Length: 276
Image 1 (cartoon, helix red, strand yellow):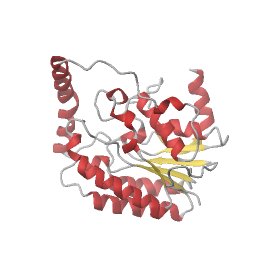
Image 2 (tube, rainbow, N blue to C red):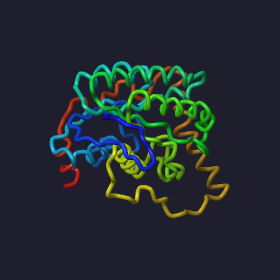
Image 3 (tube, rainbow, N blue to C red):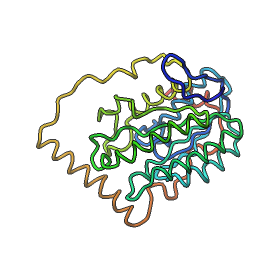
């Protein structure tokens, strides 16, 4: 068996992948995790670096673009990704769809499964990920019911298609706001780091950095006035522009190209970053 969703004492089967392609939206593009050169890192880049320790000639492409909805990820991104002949594909999408009124998690799951089946038919392994639990998140919490239905579908898809699944819903450290950026939607560098390690273990490996499971030290809760000011700033700087884009029918990813459109060696990029 290649991909696996087995849990408990039985670990998934890891493989020495050589051609990893990441598909998705802003989460996979790496928003919230800036690089020193002005670019973005993100959990997928970090996962590729971890996997390169097992495969010296691992090549990696990242076709994810912020704001992308599932029809684009499961359509054009999969088309382009398969042209690269990967042996491992991560495909994460649906979050931008679920945020919109009238979103149908059943239809989203059907579209995603069709894409996963296409990828699996080539012999490539697939890594999916559930949404994180939005409990307590402003505005986004209202989508919790639909997100939970989508999570249930993802488990079923992974089982039917023999895919790996990263269960972000169970990552309790993501309930700490320090794992998220100021926009409260994209993860912070620490959030991306921990999710990469969780994904690495979902693929059957054991992370040497075991601290990713440990909660951050407690911090004082903000006072009512401070919380009010923070919420007002967030609404002005992030929520209002997001609503404006929805009303105009535009996306933050319009005219944004994939950051890593071709398969390139991971080892060299990782070494360059380590030397900075």
